[in-house]
Length: 465
Ligand SMILES: Cc1cc2nc3c(=O)[nH]c(=O)nc-3n(C[C@H](O)[C@H](O)[C@H](O)COP(=O)(O)OP(=O)(O)OC[C@H]3O[C@@H](n4cnc5c(N)ncnc54)[C@H](O)[C@@H]3O)c2cc1C
Image 1: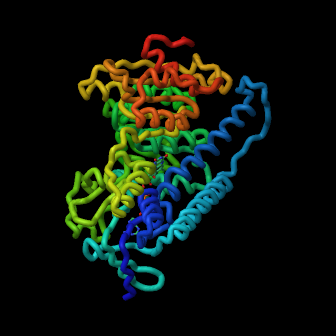
Image 2: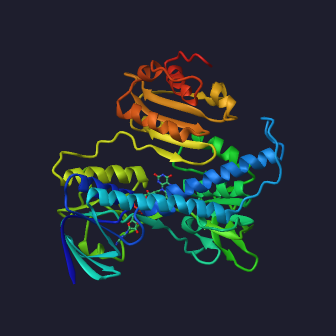
């Protein structure tokens, strides 16, 4: 068997693993990355990027359809709007191809060796990979586990046939006439909204009392309102109990305990993602676990010396940018730099309609930490740029310590607010106070003007409301 010795072995080339490998290569470390599929992982191939491509196509389609229906106040009219989802998916696949090839190119540039195949641990420092050229043994001084996560299945509605995960939903060639989405978290709502805009009749089934349960009700209200406008039926407090394949229906127990049958050419199950920690030998390493995730410390070290873990396999928040930041940090730690996890903000974005952003603490979370806080929001209905874009729904909300005005959290809901997440995170990382945000000149006319206005409102001196 061919043996490859190396300084650093990275298992998995998702955003955590590929960033870690690139940074390690840049730092001159002899690095090998093993990936069973394409470089880029869930994020580039079946997650963040393809979902946002589909969401963008659906948004554009819905926009022109509204125009064709004479429903825009902009004075634009057109006729005969159609979508060829096969072409949309081919366009999305082209973006994925460019990005995965791009990662492969970055590996080359950084001098990282790649091995294509499924890694199986023999011990904490050795993995065996079945490659097209036969089995290879990789021995490393240090190992980074970056194996990511996979969709969780529902026993009552197992995957297969018409029951699909987000991966298959992103590759559909035709718009299903009816779609039932089980799970009202961000993945289910992003995709459910996109398919509703593409023409599907969508029903969302959520077991908890409200959608996007990780965010507060004030923040998610505009999303619920828009789902209703799009004709999406949302059943909260409802549980999927099975399928009626004959009548193509999802069987549900609704909040009052009564059964309900929901028409569903496709059933999209988005009830969460589980870490990939089984079936490839890491069970035998007997690493300490935190529930189903690998337990790590503030340097992403596992309980085994010289074995690190990053990304989704280490738990919430399961987000690509957290995985990347961990990957970069671990490469530097292995290279001997002094680093530890000291992030104040891991922004989270839901690319729903409208979009939702959260950086730092919500008012309730801040209060739950025993802090006396001041909080206020500034609505986009009082923002000129939002009016010019038909984007008046939503707001920016700022929460700060009452004593010294240190900003603890910033949330926003509204059209295109995902791009504001950069400013929000920067403010929190830099330790901004309300006065810093209020006194920073924001360009006019932009939606971002609602940010200093929200800070001024907390200070009791908002100008435009
Ligand atoms: C539909 C969808 C939309 C999403 N949207 C967003 C978003 O907008 N923003 C955001 O931040 N996050 C989003 N996410 C989450 C994001 O994709 C993940 O948080 C991120 O990809 C995690 O990165 P990772 O490196 O930990 O793992 P992954 O990206 O899952 O990569 C792990 C890689 O390891 C490989 N692997 C695993 N085990 C082995 C093995 N034994 N041998 C060889 N290779 C192995 C896998 O093939 C995979 O390529 C989305 C996810 C989904 C499903």
